[in-house]
Length: 178
Image (tube, rainbow, N blue to C red; front, side, top):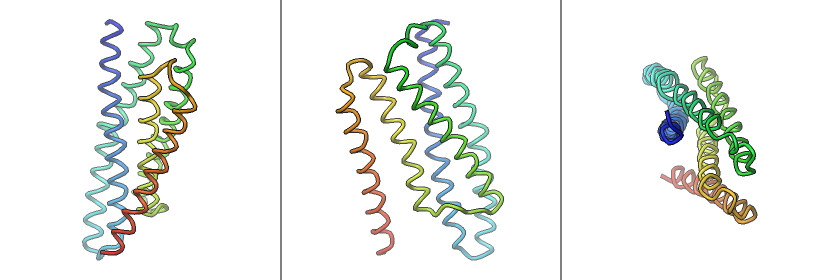
């Protein structure tokens, strides 16, 4: 296979990985909120959310992570000089953090299955935005590579993070007023 084939497959599975992570945490939010329902409804919802989480995690999200990393490694093997570039070090740092995020999300899934609802739906909404911030950071790093003005990028990154937190707070306020 060629570098461009590796790159295309890397991007396809990266999109699948992020889609899985985004949807998974949404399921965690709904699963957590279902605990406020009547017992009969709660039991039915718990069973359904656990099934959906299990299938999404093991059929889409985790395989997409493995394939994203595999094709990323194949690109680096094909073009090892990328490993000498500072932007790649930054990207790989964010990817390392994303892998950690992935397994922390898996732990949340296991906790929910055991009936341990440690995080509120509001905290899970914040957790969901962590992956968004990593996505934004990685895309900007890869697109701008060495021409990226790091001060400007850092300000944009934190601006987006603050904006997302404000939007979550506003959403919560609107929801509680209904």
